[in-house]
Length: 479
RNA sequence: CGGGGCGUAGCGCAGUCCGGUCAGCGCACCGCGUUUGGGACGCGGGGGUCCCCGGUUCGAAUCCGGGCGCCCCGACCA
Image 1 (cartoon, rainbow, N blue to C red):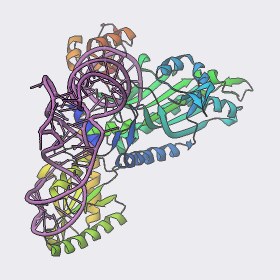
Image 2 (cartoon, chains in turn cyan, green):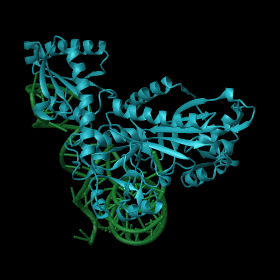
Image 3 (cartoon, helix red, strand yellow):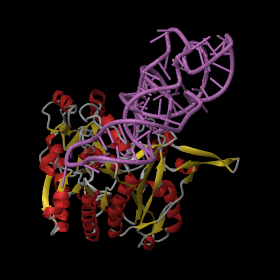
């Protein structure tokens, strides 16, 4: 079992994060450098995320398929920016069946190339479009510096790849899927996000436009948790995805891709977690309610366990993901801390006093200590539990939003910007030049995160160079 | 890839300077008993190629040479 206390967030935020991931049994280090094992508690969380996303993908007309892990190396040569972006981090298979391969194979770092190749075979006519395919899988990028969930050599994700007959339609798709991500992040994960464009330098390798959702972690650093790209005809030209349009003219298709990964788990931990551990939003929590039985003598135990079993059955039948912690050798106090660390949103205590009064004790994970405890009647318990879970879901979102908004600053001068990005985000006018962007990065290590879709009416002056600026952008240190 | 730290029981560590009762501690684990509304306790017990390879030595966790791995901090990235 874990040691008693986690390193506090204020003492050492990364240490807090690492300890929490290991102790909550979300993931563990694999024998291969940079790789992780996602443990059952972490994977169940991922499955719940997958369910929320997959439902939204299906609702927007997408279907799932699977493409291979190995991609001929030559495919990466076909799109100039793409190869430049990804070659440094490719893992390459050179041998198979004991022999050196004629053509080396890359372990996919993302699947634009192989999917582009396949789409070129499948598309001849405008009637074949659009193609709206998603795949769930893993990819590998040879990262230099890794962190569990945030950046690992292999990570699990989904990648949607679509091809369309017009630029407008493909752009619509790009925005639509970013909206899906934002909706999922805010409603299911209780993580407030900013939607917007990535700057030219932050753009995905090979994309004409990259959009993303950005959120603020408890240490005020920014994390991008989902992206959606518009490729124009770049990949279509590279892989000859062409079709006859309604005017009987040969035209290249317009493609998009969009992805969200297990990094979202890292976001969840860092957006909601506190010194006690995780806080799982009820909608995706692997366990929504844990029941801790409390008793002294065997006689009490029988009565308590009978009540516990009844409550368990009632909640389970009501569709709640509920677990009874019936470990005999551990004290209730230990169990309280244990489940708090794992982030279970609602704890239910049942002891002799509750049997007497036909009640149960509820303890909310989002409100620490006595304040979060209440005693409710066994009658109508399912409704009380559901209401409380809804309330926790909402309050997690509100708390995260408040924290984020409190830490977004509007510096008046460049000097002030430099101070502000040490403890939050700066929201400033920017002339959109790469030079000014680079200067901020050099001076502060903060980068442009997103250029929000929602922009003020007025124009302003660039916080860096003072020239006329049309856009406001978030500058922040990022993961 | 540079800088720092580390590798001894499942986990966290001491021991390494100065070679020889140094194979040890805490937690976890197993057994029995008492406990249980905010991190229980007593007694008994099991568990180790001291990261690997080589060298020095009568003798190496300890000294020397080489390797491997992991973590943390910096340049690239979902």
